Image (cartoon, rainbow, N blue to C red; front, top):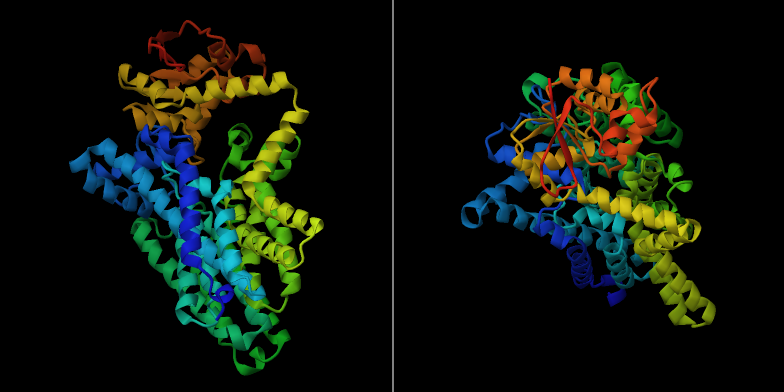
Length: 606
């Protein structure tokens, strides 16, 4: 075969990995060396790792220092904690605990970045090969993936959270599914990857939906080619789901209706979904020989499966956040930036909208042209299905942008490779501009830059400068230096703004009432109620709680949010949040000196 068909994937993905690693180390390396966590989830993951190394049990998911005395059960899969804790435990005796943590903070995400880059480049090559452009698509994919910031930022040094693992598993599922017709092992691998993704976090559920959906459609249209693939994928998914339940969940909780993490509902979804896939693949002749028979069978079994899941776990119909009360949804959820919808950004944050959605939507357009040209190529519909599902999630909550951007890379690479070929075949100014436009339009970094330029052009300079200052001041409260100053305060429980919670846990021995986790309803609502209330009302709330201190960062957006959303009958400027933001405090609070830290701590006088 020609080089265009065989490709040079190994060199391409290594080059892409190197470029992405340089970008990420340049941007986040210094912060990782000082363990300065930009995202609270990375800090909280490190807290969990330390707890595991200190002897916390495998099935004990309770973070005891979050809303004591009962603590808060976390919804993260502990197998990620174990994979991170193991090398830290091995290195700590030689290099010390802190240095071991820093070393793993580099090796873990950058190693996963290599796996992601390998998979993304291979998928791009599979798509490009349809036009004899495997090599060109692989190189384009490597470059686009390295610049796909909403995706690769999840692989930055210091990133301990599970999103990067989910992205690797998702791309692995895509590649395996594209090869499952020719390989039983690939079909099983796809099912295992999907099952493991779902067992790791709720973000894996849409991946399972995409995988089962497109595999079912391929079988529906071409049963002779995909019956075996559907069967083995279903077996892999069902088996993995059945195995991961006892691995991650204690026997006493196997039947509990947990809707935001691995538990009976997720396991049942995997087993039932996988079972339906197996059942469809072995339909008797009369049902399996006609499109109508296959469609009716799929509809009946699918409806039965959904009905069974709803009958068993009706509380999960609304998703993992269904249990949140109205106050938690309106007063806490609206402050979580990644939970915002794409539409909400259109009128308030053009720069962020371009950054999170530009490359993903450009990839969707490229996918449309690709599949219009190759509509009969069944495997091409597989990455498109994952891209469509991820974009739908992104439109609902922008947390899906990383997955949407990742799944857009292979189609963007195809578009760049085709445009380059057309330009080289018959050069012209128009073709040159088309090639340049497609290359730039497929790059997430270019969309982010365009968004910044557009935002600055429509926003007054004074407002931009004010936002930059407020953002810098807010970030200064979450630095290790600011948080370590709290070590001078006698150990106690903080009634704190929730954005500070994870940092306090990772840098001090204090406990906190609030952190950005939806299971901590009681602690978070106690804090919100106190900060929205008047000084006298807040005193009653604070003294009834277990808190010893009130901890705030006046510069954080939380301060203004609680003032703007004051409790009924309370003027915004009379809320406890507004008072503390101005540097004022009621008589039942005593300031605690913590030096030059931008944080403010007050002892509660009972």
